[in-house]
Length: 394
Image (cartoon, rainbow, N blue to C red; front, side, top):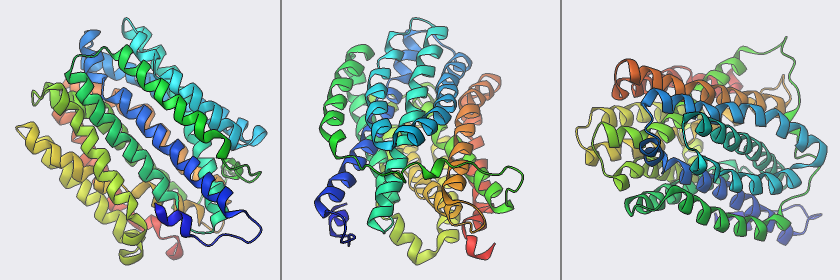
């Protein structure tokens, strides 16, 4: 990421200001990953504390998706009205405080409401920081979105790893989340003044004419839904799978998502280089097939030590598919770039909406291992649809 300071900048801009903005946005992606993974690392603990079945947990996790779906359009309006800098700064603060809500839950209904609030702020923050990323990338004039998303994955890696260690020591989730929130708020306050102020930051929330949606965009939204659903399912259920099915200890249970995030982060850092060599179609297809293989390894393993490498391979496979789908959507000549990217992103939240309860209900009807094999099928479907990311041939 040091390369960000070496990019050629427009002469009309102050390089130091743009460089500072790049790092401020990067910090926002890192914080988002840290907050998400801090919560994810304690899902098994809260499930045990509240005595929730897999089906009940699945319904509770639906609250996150519901909140996110509600937060995205509202955040889009706020970004258009006040600019992404203000919305990114304030939504990060709200997201930090929302982390405390799940730890205050006393039963399934209150956990659902807590996660709805958490999801609302997560969705709003996601829109705002991606708006900031679009603005900074436009000013730099060189692709950098993959590296921003790599910071999110690095946050997931460190947050889940540390969360597993804290869980293993028996620290209460409220103490864990409260301490983490204070640390995250300090980082937010230190970086907020350097966020980029641009009137163009909200252009990706432009409306799309629903009467004229190209086939390519439809395929890209399917890819987006498959990937977001799968990523969310790994985040929500990998720890539960490792603990319940493979009888992993708390640290090992949290390590599943940590290694998934590690694989994703590493390959996102080199995603642009891989794409230049293989091309977008082959990169997506190879990534989807690698993810399918990794998931198969994890779900057929009989011990945590064999499952964990499978989750790492899954993260590596998923790593660049969503950024390439966003890029392809933004390069459909017949559509406004921002509107197309927002459509692909919105389809992902639909995946988040239906994914957690779907996995929970299938697990309740059969087994959690069988339910998670759905993700293998979604990965294979993505491989089949990979041609959609090459808009030059549409």
